Image (cartoon, rainbow, N blue to C red; front, top):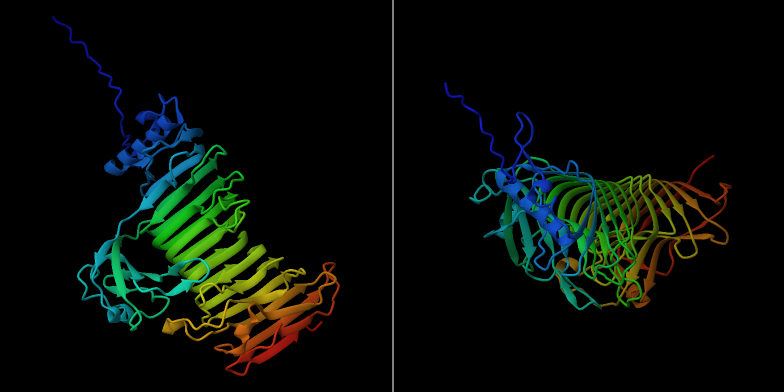
Length: 492
């Protein structure tokens, strides 16, 4: 009788692991990472693993990979991420001497769409075939400039993103679009309710780098969680950073993010660069963000419904065009919260300001718009440099040609609970402090009509009570409306 021997064949081909009941996974170890001896080779192993995972509908597993040294090749492209990416505490050191770009990206392209301005303001898209069924992000872009950025040589354009579910808009744009001064351009992204996750990565950008490597770019996304990320940057003369950049997206949560340094310039005449670079984002939340940078942490445009919770930052900025911001239990120090063309409400709840301007109105956009500032149970630690609640920067007396921005307005202020800590010799707190070109004060200021401060307590750093002079305006101001001004101290 002949004996039949089993023959086992082994192939060293990349493979995906499809365990029963578990998510399908691929590993960079099977796409050249084991064999790679250079940083460029390791980059390609990661890139190829993620591309294959997207093709298979699988996830990338970083099990057994603790740290990597990467160098970006001349053909560098962002590594595309799938629905769930857990780096598992991976530490990456990346050197970039080829071109600026994000190392990782969540990207969803937009499709051009014909849209009527009246439909946008009506919020009923059931007659638009592309939007009548399913979940979509409608991206609106005004082709006419919203305003000029004076002194910087460019025009600012407004954008909005609207969540459309089965033909019905779920949120309104920051401002109406059915106006004679608007030239509407529109596109849309098809999305779903499923959560997209990115977590568990530390990225060190090396001193040898001559180009910027951003950590993560998010475009055209809905319902995204980014958490447990840490990015470091050496001191550098490079500028224009955006460690985390988001555009044309809605419903995002960034949680437990630490950024130590940004590419925002040292020794240059024009410095800028941010940990978070945001443009056209609706409904975003930032929890437990601790970040430092030479220029500031948040730099954004075209923002609506933004919330910061338990953050330790030196600056939050909506350069131009925004509505409704909440900062809750945040430690804000060293710089300012600054706005241009802002609407709705800016709420500070249980925040601490230290050597900081709680609200500064930016001048360069010449867009002084109506909004309300609300403070609840906050602490303001004054310094000789920063001792104003609202700083109004003034550029010149020119009217803005855009009709929506023609009137120059200052915000109302409503305070319920404020402890002012005034070290000697600081003895005055300005509520509104116009600065720079005071010729602009010759015109009447619109919208401002209410300044209400209740529950005020003024103390020295030791906690001993002291008198602090409250001055409504640091200079003479003419207002169109009579200002109802009340200050009520805490009664012991």
